Image 1 (tube, helix red, strand yellow):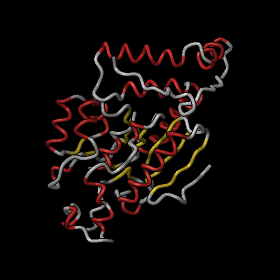
Image 2 (cartoon, one colour):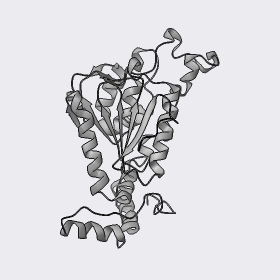
Image 3 (cartoon, one colour):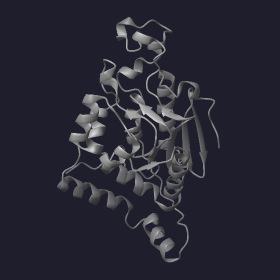
Length: 286
């Protein structure tokens, strides 16, 4: 199923229960716009509530993932809000100055994989940090370069990057704005894998399809919620939430089906839904 008419600057398609979101401004190396941010948020929201979507892959058209903010306005690219003129390029990306995508990838209940097929610079990199996993193309340029443009790293990157890669790596990348390679990203824990560019999307799709078939959607959604808890949980809080969420799934259809499918050497047929069966009351952290 393909449905892209309602989105600007990206395409959206679902096949085999995997949603593929493609940033789609290849002539501009998928430079970020306000329309792209709005569309990406609406695509994420759709994936969150659509039971036909069990995993999400985000990639870029052409040879880049996202080359950063659209710099067509030159020195006015990061104009203050009071300086925006209706219809101007900087007005079109005014959301860039705060949170450009809502909901974020970490807020939705489906795993989101960034298939970074090429350059990811600035906001292109910080948006990828919203995802649960990142596969990155070797030979491409990566960087959170905003301090070299007179602004700040954005899109929650002061929260996501230390959480993903640790404080030492985060300070180095955020405060220097330097470029880094896919291989460095793997070594720092930012990326799961570094791959040739032409293999990034296929590898991400293979993992997404494996998730879609072999993992219980509600179990994955609850696990993701624990992983992205804010602030990060203590051991005791984690134990409490794991116990509470086990009570949501244990003894129910998927807990039986997962074992039977394994014993019978067949694909599982999951029935619980992250939307329909989501706990009415979110457990406290204890």
